[in-house]
Image (cartoon, rainbow, N blue to C red; front, side):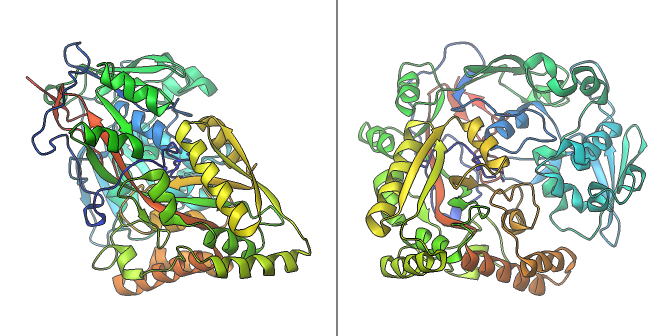
Length: 550
């Protein structure tokens, strides 16, 4: 998920100043019980409601085409998939109360709850999933995540116009029975079904609102634990508990207010005066709150942050230039002076949150990325200038317009100027605009992030496939694509791991992206929240389980 879009990409909003506990704890939940300390700040006073900061306007609230982490945070609370994740990231029933799997692991049959309904009164049925997934794969929707639907039999063929919708590997046997046939056995299939792009879509509501679907609170329908009752754009989203949700009695919160405060200092001030119950912290703010003996919550969100290079740019199509830029940035100095927390220098692209053959994938593949090597960077830069037959290169770097992102851009700009003599123009812009520029491939370099959509190395590595909707830099490598095809059909775990390792090595040699760091995020909670704030690599924020202090 984006974070430019942090999935995945990951773009979450570019808060490089987030925090990361210990790498070995990646992907584990973090609740709000830190050393049994209570917050000195009471939080909002309204009964059974909390107010949190999501930093920016969600760019797109249409699950079929959404790609960014901020939108997925909201969607997680208002839409329910066939399956969902519990507090420990384990797959549990959602709309599907149970399911069966064939012996060859190619056919799944899901049995849906027959008492769920949309906020427009329509029943939630198997047809809603068929409609949503067909839309995801329909070329006219131009969904960046369409490739997720390739897991279904004939998913890719349909997306490429080679077969009709009637040949897709999913169909409604009845209103409450959904049959799914996969292209290949996929051990992580159920985990992917919890991801936002596989949410159901009510056809009646979509036809009613058309292209306006998901643009306002009253232009979409809901089947999740909460309903969006208000959306003041660029300001606030209000969610209220869904009275028709099957598990409503286990949900304590009656209302969630989501504010969009882009300035980190303004957000912290709002928290201190009791207007927010959760707020993210920059590195400087972490130290400030620690000095006040304040309980800090940290977790690894599984994201890799990096420079993405647009290979359509004739300069950046040069591999030596990409290596020069990547090697010339002192990543540890970046963490020490800007991020200021437990985030770690990225030694590969796939983050430590992802499991490998027997351990974390990053440990098994080893250190593949050059953290910082000035002499090597200069050598590659001189080779690039010679190959490009130029004496000077000027490029632009697009970033978010929040205060932290501006600091990040300034650091990178100065590093490349001082270490290479390379001039970088910084272009700050709103989060939504940055995502649009990336999707349109209208950039030279972008500081972006990618977070995992499910727990398998492919969640990072398949974005570099030729033509992938999230491959914003237009990277293409025939050998890489062929290896991806092998991974998708390989049943032997050891051989599959060997293919995945080779994919990681190719990325770290070609460098379509230059890894910078693996992110840890820090945040604080008001005394109103007793427990249940779920923050993991696979659930960036889930407030469904929140319990309030008595």
